[in-house]
Image (tube, rainbow over the protein chains, first blue to last red):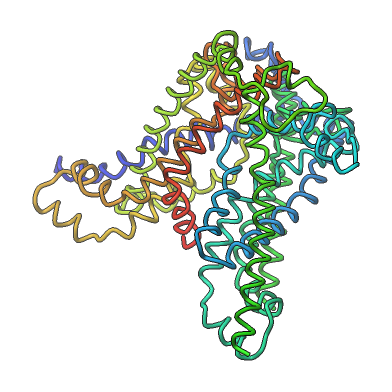
Amino acid sequence: MGKSIRNRLMPYTFVLPALLLLFLFSLIPILIALVISFTGLDITGLGNWSTVKFVGMDNFVKLFHDSQFLQSIGNTLYYVVIGVPLVVLLSLTVAILINFGNNKFFSFLRLIFYTPSITNTVAVAVVWTYMYNPNMGLLNNMLGKIGLGPLQWLNDPATAKISLIILAVWKAIGLNMLIFLAALQGIPRSLYEAAELDGANWWEQTRHITLPSLRFSIFFVSVTTLIGWFQFFDEPFVMTKGGPLNSTNSVALFVYQNGFQNSNFGYAAAGSFIMFAAIIVATLIQFKIQKKQQGE
Amino acid sequence: MDTNFRSERKLSKGVVGLILAFWGLMTILPFLWMFLSSFKSNAEISQMTQNFLPQHWTLMNYKNLFVSGNFGVYLKNTLIITLASFVGLLFNAMAGYGFAKFKFKGKAFLFIAVLSTMMIPGQVTMIPVYLILNQLHLTNTLLGIILPGLVGAFAIFLFRQFMSNISDSIIEAARLDGASEWYIFWHIILPISKPVLAVQGILTFIGGWNAFLWPLIIANDQKYYTLSVGLQLLQGQHTTDYGLQMAGSSFMVIPIIIIFLIFQKYILQGFNVQAEK
C-alpha cells in the first residue's frame, strides 16, 4: 500500500521543481499584473500595502491620454510593420542563396550569418552605437569615402528608428535563416528534377515549388518575429533610452521606465496588459490568414 | 545542351557565392571593427579619420576594464549565474521526462499550462516578479536574479519530444531488475538524451552568459551586476571612451563566438530537431 502511494507520487517529483518555478514566475505574475493594473500601486504602496487604492479603469483611461504612451504605440507599430517583412524577406533570401551550394564555403557562410544571433544584445548595441557615431563612427567614415553623408543616425528623430531596425534585422537574420534552411532541405529533390525536365527555370521553380513548400516556416517565422518586435526593448534601452524626442520609445521600454524608473507599478502594469492584448490580437489575425490560405 | 546547362549552373553558383561573400563580410564587419578598435588607444579613436587596423596595438583598454571598470566582479557574478542555470537545465530535463514517460492525474492540463507560459511577454511579468521577489526579500541578491529565468517551457517541450521517442521496453526492463526511478533517470535516460542535452547545454550557457533583463531589474547594487548590465553602465559612464567600450563588448562576445565555433555542429543540428518537432 505504502509503496503504491509512493509510485503514484513519483511522477510529480520529476515535474514539481520546474512547475513550481513556472507557476511562481510566469502564471501567478499574470494574475498579479492584472490585479495591480487596477490599482495606484507605487513606491509607498510597496512599503505599506494598506495605502494601495483600487482605481478601477483609471490607469487605462489615463494611458490613452498619455501622449508618450500613444507615441510609443505608434513607434512599436512602425517597428512591427517595417521590421517583420524585412526579417522574413532577408532571412529567406539568405537561406535560399546558401542552399545553392553545399561545399565548405557555403557552410562557412552559414556560420557567419548565424553569429550575430548568439551574441549579447547589449554588447552589439554598444558596438553599433559606436558605428553610428556621426563623427567617429565607421558608417559615416565609409559613406564619406564614396562621397555620401554624413548621416545623423541615432541623433535625428527621422532616422533613429531606422537605425535601430537595421541593427535588429542584422541580429535576427541568422536564427530565422536556420529555420528556413532546415525546411528547404526537407523539400524532395525529385520535385526540382521533374520541373527541370519540364523546362522550368530557377525563378519558376522557386515560385512554384520552394515558396509553397515553405509556407509553414514562413508563417512560423512571421509569428515569432512579430511577437519579438512587439517586445522590442534592449536596443532602444541601450542605444537611445527612447530618444531623441521619444522617437524610438517602444511600449516595452515605456513599461520599464514607468515601472522601474518612476515606480508607478500600477500604471506600468496596465500598459503591459495593453501590449499583451495587442500581441494576442495580432497573432490571432495571423493564424486566421494562415487558415484561409490553407483553405484555398 | 547538357554542358551548356551545367556551365550556366556553375556561373550562377559563382554569382551567388559572390553576393553571399559580400553580404557575409558586411555581417561580420561590426565584430571586426569592435575587436580591432578594442586595441586602439583613445587618442587614436578620437582622430577624425582612422584606419581599420590599430596603428599602435595596446592592451590598455582590457586592463582598464578590470582596474577601473569592476569587470572582475561582473565576470564572477556572470559565471555563478551561468553555473546555476545548469540546475535549471536539470529541472527542465526532469520535467520533460516526467511529461514524456509517466501517466499521472492532471498531466494534460499541467502540460498545457507549461506551454502557455511561452506566450507571456517578459514585460508583463517583470513588475509582478519584482514584487514577489521583494516580498520574499530576494531583490538585490544573486538568488533573486537566478530564480525567475531558471526553467523554460520551450526547453521542457524539447526534452519531452526527445524523451517520448525513447523505447518503453528499456525502462520496463530496468524496473524489473529493481532499479529505482531516479537510477533509471540518471543512468539510462540522461545518457540516451545526450544530443538534446548538448544543444540545451550550449543554449543554457549562452543564455546565462548573456542574461540582461532580470539582473537589470533585480540587482540595485553594483556588486551583483552581470557583464551585460555592467557593460551598459560602463557605456553610460564613459560615453566617449569607445576603446574601453569595445574592449568590454569583445570580452562578452568573443568567448561566445569561440564556444559557438567549437560546438556549432550540435547547435545547427538543434534547429533541425526543432523544425521537425
